[in-house]
Image (tube, rainbow, N blue to C red; front, side, top):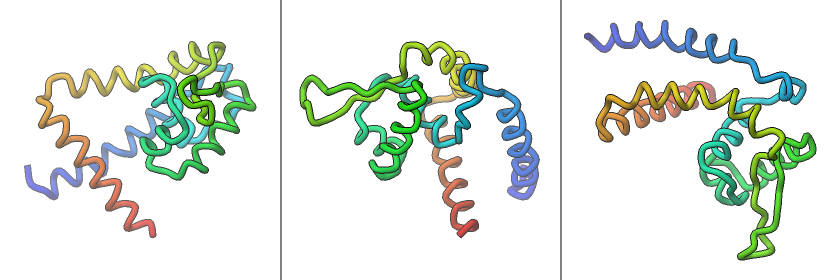
Length: 147
């Protein structure tokens, strides 16, 4: 396959992926919350990795802690997230998905993780890293174009 053939195929693929992802609407319990992609990334991290501090989430999301604090505040007011004191350091707050929201969020977001696991399962760790690095490089290139 030539580079132009690969580019053509990917240009056709990405809109289909986005379109299919958009058709998977959130469960009824979450529909009124106007969740944006940044909320989904935050919720996915908490679902996959469990409770974390604001600093940990900010580092993983590659955004400022103040941005994460705003997202957490928004979702906390809606009852989607809960904050509690860190038992080891009472100045820090641990953030997690609320018990009442966890089933709906898992029902909604877990299929995406399963699809990635299924897709990557047949690849070696090096090949998996190549897929991730390629998508990150594409994101960076598109970000440069959008500036």
